[in-house]
Amino acid sequence: MRDNKYNGWTNYETWSFNLWITNEEADYNCALEMAGESTDRWELSKKLEEWAENMAEYHLTKHSSFIHDMVNSSIKEVNFYEVAEHLWEEKKGV
Image (tube, rainbow, N blue to C red):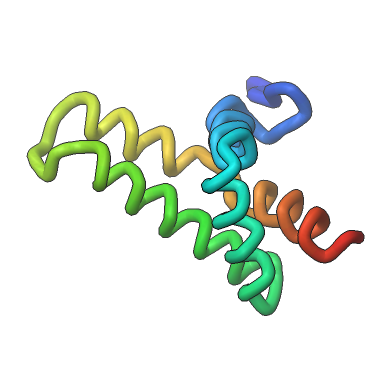
């Protein structure tokens, strides 16, 4: 089995998603707001996943295409729970 760890994260996709949402102030504030409104890490992970899917739909056409398929495939690889844990700890000060 191949180890896909990337910069301490589950994989490249997880690292990249976390990087993008924590690197832009508006996105970071939105993510922290989601953390504050969530009852637990699991709920937050589901909100993050939905957010990623909505961002992809917004930036891609509704038509099937190679790029659309690749973006959706990458989103499925993100460990949203791992990102949620990171944000939860930041928001809650743990």
